[in-house]
Image (cartoon, rainbow, N blue to C red; front, side, top):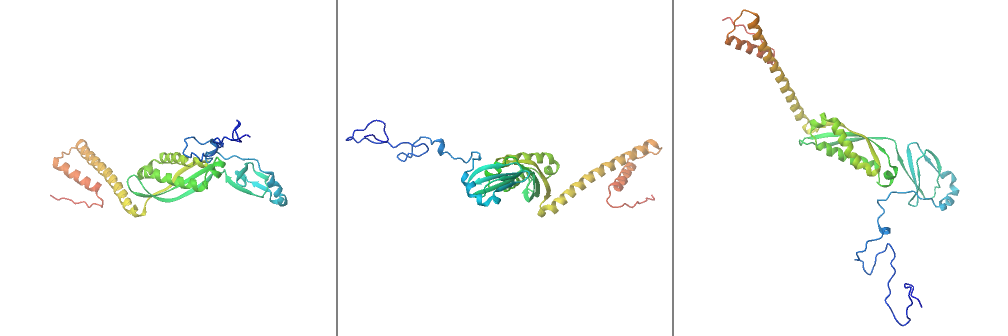
Length: 291
């Protein structure tokens, strides 16, 4: 007789060791620690793109009694994927009404229109350690509906969560003054980093920019005082520079355009009076000396 696992004849009285056939894609149970690499059939298919396959005719037969329900409406700027028993059978992109048996059918819809999201206020610590309240406006569009429907569980939540994290990261790496003055640079950095995060979901960032930027309530009063003090210091510096220029010009004109000779003491008095009048906060009262 012939062994079903061998091509050579086997003697009926000699028992030779039999070797089990090797089926591609299975594990050798006699030697599970073998160094042989698994075949391509055992590799994970998680990273492979989703492709539509033909629908089984059995669904058409089962759906005949429900003819009014066997249609799928595709709206403008919308993509619909029909799924039968876990298998994608069709990707509908053209607007209209398409025949699609209802038995065993599941539909997933994605809009390709530009969507706008107002990201809520979030408290972030800037590069100087000051807490600020920041919000942003996100405009995005789905450019790969297959990825948006099947590669992530919810592409809207995926986009908003990742973009919110990018906003916190970028704001935290800059100071409050930089965020206020370098608006274009900050928005460009936000868009570039956010695009890297949402690409796996088939999303394209159209625009991303900061909407509101203020100090947190607990330090807002102190920071306003600081800003007021800086503005007052800048204003005082300008006033003093102008007062010195006025006093210098007055003495120069008195000496050159008149026959009055001024002593050093007279010059000091003139400069003192002019600086007092010009730099004073309150209105000055003149005092006449009778000596």
